[in-house]
Image (cartoon, rainbow, N blue to C red; front, side):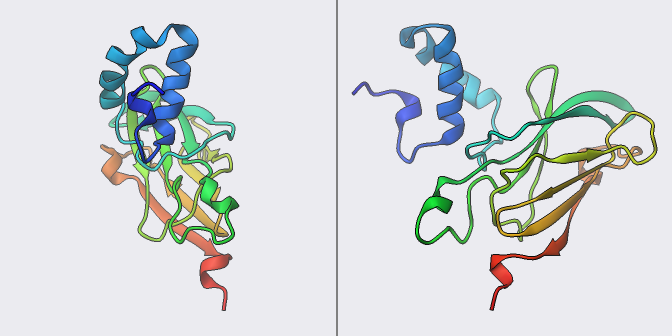
Length: 173
């Protein structure tokens, strides 16, 4: 087998997906030199697992500027298919990506967010102004998460994440 950067162990689902997209467009010899620079530019997706849910598309207001965004959960960790699921799974984040250039705008994580987010993220416009203000999603551990993106937020540092409910496996006795 050829020594290719997306085949390095441990396998990184993000690198595999990026390589698959790139390889659909051209040959391996043309992908290899561009692959590493692409992955470096679009970094911050360390928690990304196998994401196949429908992304949420909308607009957010950040620092008074309207931004078109694509929002998606971190995806499914294949270790859930094993006899003993992981205590902390891959895919345990929610990503907000700039729809115009693919840059990561924000990644919602929390120390208690230990399970994969394989389901679609629901976006809510609370005041009817056409901008997403809140996100809600459940994870593989039975937790429900709420993320707030206030319209007056100057930076993503003003965005918050809170656990609404814990109904799953980590609290089972």
